Length: 156
Image 1: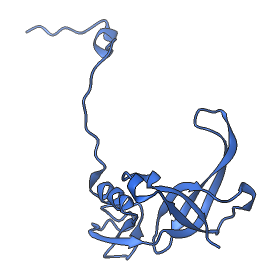
Image 2 (image 1 turned 90 degrees about the vertical axis):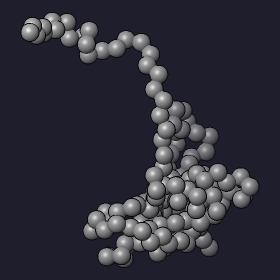
Image 3 (image 1 turned 90 degrees about the horizontal axis):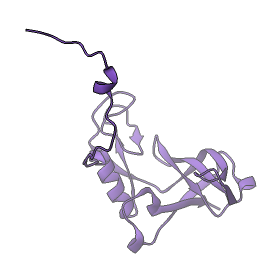
């Protein structure tokens, strides 16, 4: 039996041209339920039976104690600004007409939160610890996406 060694590795390591790949991406168990909840105007998380942590976005395993998470809970659509940034350029790198504020919102009753836009507030008014509430898209416009929450606005 003869074994030949390739002396032209580019011929076997590279494919020049287009390859058609069909695939289906799913949100997974936790993602499907979370986004269905958003379409219904609810924020869902999962509670750990061991440590009691409530994870938003939901997970199927607790990141702290690795317990399987099967209990679903609804959390309020209010929380506090944990951190924020002000964007002066869009994703394409071009200047925005008006700056956009993005914040990590630590939701009430949850050990996690959501990264989302802030609205109805000027950049110089935002601060860590600011109480905010979700502004939902009208029910007929919701699609089961994070954009079903239009933005979070300050709570007076």
